[in-house]
Image 1 (cartoon, one colour):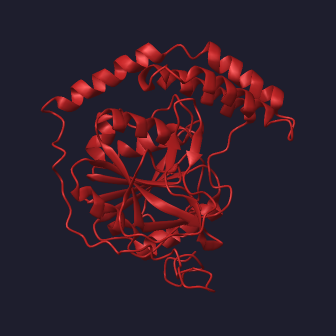
Image 2 (image 1 turned 90 degrees about the horizontal axis):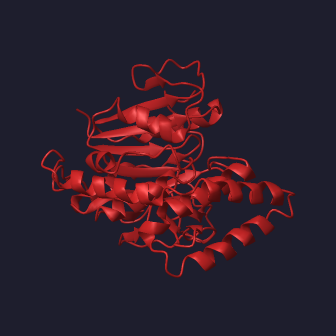
Length: 338
């Protein structure tokens, strides 16, 4: 059985998929398997079947559905989610897996930097506030290279590492909350189970612009409103309702510039009308807690790893005047290059 399974959901951009596969195949760690989850057709023109598993899925499958289908096909104790278009750095996986030596760590967030400028951070983990605001940590800042991991709520949707048993204990990736919120939903669930997510400063991946899952203004507002009510009862009502009303109003007004204000308002109203599942969600969380205490769930002390993580991200450059890029971020010479 492989130590690590790398799951790459393919939603339809062949060039980005191939860029990611080149990077992963050139830098992959020992004892790993790579699975591409095909929500769209792909011709596999470079005949990589001996090194990559291509798993066809219905065209209607979203990112969360793709990942859940991939989980049913792999058995590795650790799982890495990687979006198409991202390019990895040498040693990126070992740098992340080293943090799983801590039995309380269920997930590890890589540092996501800009593909065109590795000195600029796109995401150092994601936070969610009780009134419904989602925030990408350190977005737009220059890289600050530190050696110590930092606790965060959840990884970006672009890249994440998980313990397999923790994913199973938390119900895997929710297909109810929308692709851009599924990692946050999982992070909140893992926290509810008493488990932690760490940002691994020694693990860096490079992402192109517009790599996040896309959705219409109506859909994003609807999902955001439903998500607030889904978690409001668990996170606590006190002090959240009034700030949430202001946050929702500001979100709607933010659509004036691109004429999406009415779509956002409609999405919030529909999401409010469909947002009465807080009690059911709390009951489900309690069920997860009880199941995680059962003997059938593997002990968080197993498995452990013995790997050496680099102190700083190999692709986040720190030399003044350099562009911060490594060989993994540009065209990679080698037999895997399409």
